[in-house]
Length: 138
Figure 1: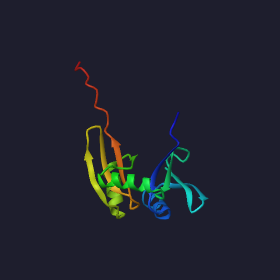
Figure 2: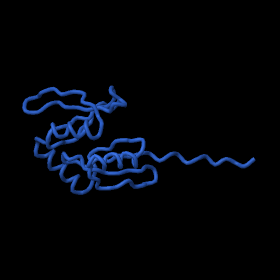
Figure 3: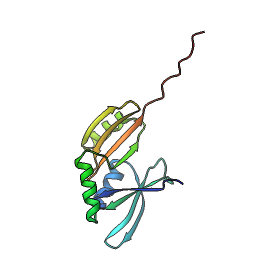
Figure 4: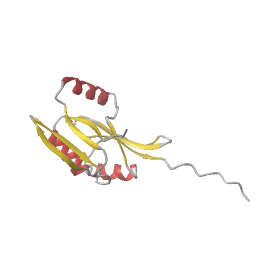
């Protein structure tokens, strides 16, 4: 079993595609018209054959209510791993991204939370390096 697809619920697919590709740096993978909307996915350029993120329209009332409740409570809808949270924070702030939480050391990770402009809070995280082994002094 493996994860191949996950989603974020977005207010506007075109706006979301622009943000996730132009600001975050993902690549468009699928854009298949399905009625009024599209099956619209993005992937990491570091893993073009890896998991896809579906930019799912907030068309169903239950999805919007759920997503909005998470955002109101400060709970991220998704988390992405980055090599350097502080570097990404600086890069994204320079691009105009608004953060709900600056880089914060949580022990096992350093994380930050930003607004994706499409109705979601997104967390970026860098795992903390493992503690160095304690070696006996010879």
